[in-house]
Length: 380
Ligand code: PLP
Image (cartoon, rainbow, N blue to C red):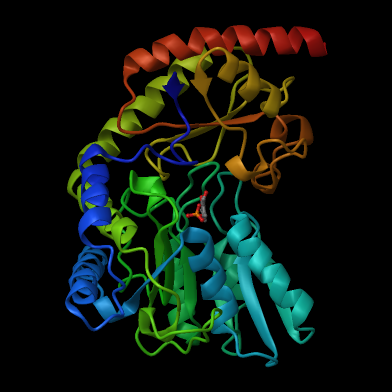
């Protein structure tokens, strides 16, 4: 199998796996218990929190562990707005469903809430001028992702943060795909809320965190004990959190080297695709992007069929977001960057990671060429 779907998830790093296994045996106590077994788990939890906080250059009190990126995004959006108070959320038209659907929930439940959706350019960058036109001081939240999961484009985070700072509005950024792959500079970018996830960086699944800037008023969305500073109650998954912190440490220590390697690999992949296959359209920004992500449309095909056929031939790819892999609807991200329906239906996401090599690419491209040509012939 050749795996080119690292934006969907990554295999757990061996060192991380060993640490988690060990933690399952040693740190099974409830970190809220005040006896020795509990305290040992609590100490490890604190240590993991300090690690994540240190990597993000924030304080441990500002890090709250969650069950993953989705919960962190949901909490950011549903937790920041005062119940029943009129408010406006300003967001982009390429957000992940974890943001998009949380915003929809607010709009359905609170008739006094509005949403302004800012378009992106044809390379997938938020149009900051349009953002400046609509944002005003009374807005409740700006929510724009750090980098897009489908096309990889990094957003103009610094400019968005400056607008948020000027109007004194909290800025939430979904950094699930960016964390561990590019510097986030939370403070410099004036980010108040940030969502991250463990399984995108070779850590265990079901684990993530939300950064909440000190002083940001938040309402919990789960009710129970006082875990995670009362913001996210429920007994923490200490072994997974320990693994998450280790995976993050490894990702940060290799970030620059991996960035260069993956940019090089994805460029090579694009050259090989363009050289071998007719009519390949590149989607997203060519270099200001998640290093391992390349998205291309192969008009005349349907991405779900390409993905299934490639899987039969031993190659794992994705057509748009993993969660919509069975959908025959065109990717909304690809339509947002101006792709026509026939192009947006045919987008394939190649997300490369640590174990991939040029040899993988030279093996995959001829297989893909055959699959694309067969499907184009069938559809013509
Ligand atoms: N946000 C983005 C940009 C993502 O790519 C994902 C996962 O694909 C999520 C949020 C959800 O994260 P999790 O799978 O940890 O819930």
